[in-house]
Image (cartoon, rainbow, N blue to C red; front, side):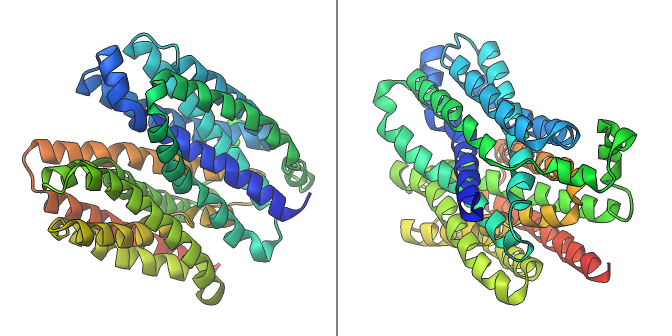
Length: 394
């Protein structure tokens, strides 16, 4: 099958994951009203899908390198679809949280499997650009999914989960269109005891990979810390600043649209200047843009422009990270390596909104929250600069 077709399939799967991860946020007001959830229960519900994805990325990434990427991808999509359908029948917080955790875990496994499957089906010279293009689907899924969900809210939140579950199940067979790449890795001598799950995970830190692995993990943690902090708190802070409900909702959409535009621009720039050099530059500029967001709540236009720029630099640059992860690990452990990095990122996506919430609950100024986020982006800048420096020495 043509590489462009496989990239399009992977794009659609990633887009679906982006939509599903934020589905609860879109319908949260209806869920809270119908099931009488308080703020604590909603917070747990939000975190459960991300926590499940963090665990699923790490565990099923290693499983994919042991038993095959294609069966893990298809099985994960089926499990995610069934769990999402089960969410539509939830009558209380415990069952809802459990099903969101299962759904997140399955989708984390699907991402860990589809990245090496897609990357290894592409020519080496086009691999980084295509993997980045594939991950543009994540924020696009959030934007388009949010628009569709908003338009269909009058059908009720349960029907939203039924629709998402059916759509996920319908896309699961698309995973069979990928060529299984694990056999190629095994043909190069990675068989027997060496393919045990524990062995695979330990190998991620062997043969000089420990420092780049840790640096990349800290970097993606910081980047998703910032991305999810912006997505979670920009609307609330906009409304608190008196910019209105419409601008508050639009601010989160604009952040993600900036991410899409930034990622597409970075693909063109990376061809000329190199992937990591472009990423480091974007993160460095992004740290300043995010730190300055606290001063942008003076008017709707200023805020939306600042949000677009910050999203373009930080989220747009971050969408290149999977292409870096593919480079870091040999084929025999690529799904496990990608899964570990995705897990570190998911951890950041949980910590970011919670940390901002704690700061704001302690009556910290919104400007301080954005300054801390900018500092986290600066840490990511240093991490990926060092990953690039280490790579050039090998």
